[in-house]
Length: 300
Image 1 (tube, rainbow, N blue to C red):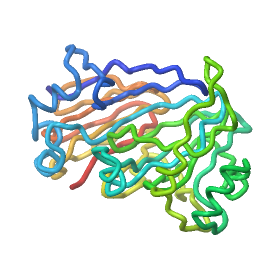
Image 2 (cartoon, rainbow, N blue to C red):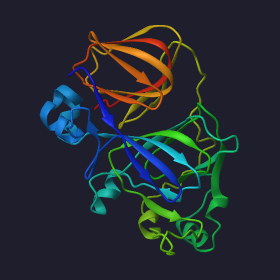
Image 3 (cartoon, one colour):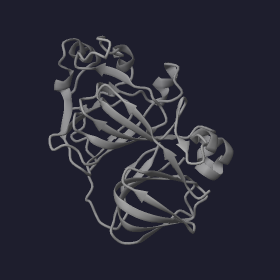
C-alpha cells in the first residue's frame, strides 16, 4: 500500500470539538479506508510502515496522534507530564506536542508558558485563589503561528482558535484550572493539582512562539525534537519530496487548497482538512496544485 487515509474520530467537548485524524490511542483508534485500525496496520506492516528504528523504539504502537481542534470556549489550563513522571504515575508515556494555527477568529488567544517566575507553593496558591492566569504568557494568534509545547509547560487553547495539534500518542492531561466551569450534570470538572505540581517545568522564557519567515514553494522546518519533526509547505508549483533515505513514516496534513500527490507512481488527492499517512517504504512523493500542508515524521 502506497498510502493510508483514515476516517476521523469526531469528539464533542464541553469547550468545542476535536477531530482525531490519525490515532492509535486504545479505544480511540482511527480506521483506514480498508476497515483496519491504525494499530492493526502497524502490527501487520511493522517496520515497513513506521521505519526500522521507530519499530524498535515503539513496537506495535504508532508514535503520533494528529488532531484538528476547534475551540468555541477556553480549554482548561493544563499541563502534560514527561515520560519519567508519566511512568511514576502509572502511564505509558508523557506528552510533548505542537500547535499550528489555522484560520482562527480575529480575537483568538492562547496561553503558553509562564511569563514570570513562581514557586510550586505559589502555583498551588494561585490555583486556589483563581489567579493562575495572571502568571501565564498570553498570545493573540493568527493563521501560520506555531507553538511548541514540551511536556511540563503550562498551556491552554483559547476561544476562537482553530489549529492542528501534533503530539505523542498519549492522552494524559492534568487539568490545573477550569474557570469554575460545570459539566452537563452541574458538577465542576476534576482538577489534578497535585499531579500537575509534579509535572510543571517552572522555566521562564522571553518568547514561546516558534519564529520563522513564511516562504513559498520550499520546505520550512518548524519543530525538531525527539518525538517529531515538522515542516510546513506552501506550494503553488510542483515539488518532488525525496524520502529514499528517511527511516520513518511521513504524515501530510492538509491546511489549505488542494493538491495531487504521486506516491511512488500512485496518485491521491490531498485536500484541506485531510491527512495522509505515507509508509516508510515510500521513496518519492510529487505534489502538484496550490496547497499548504504540514509534513511530520519521527527520527529515532
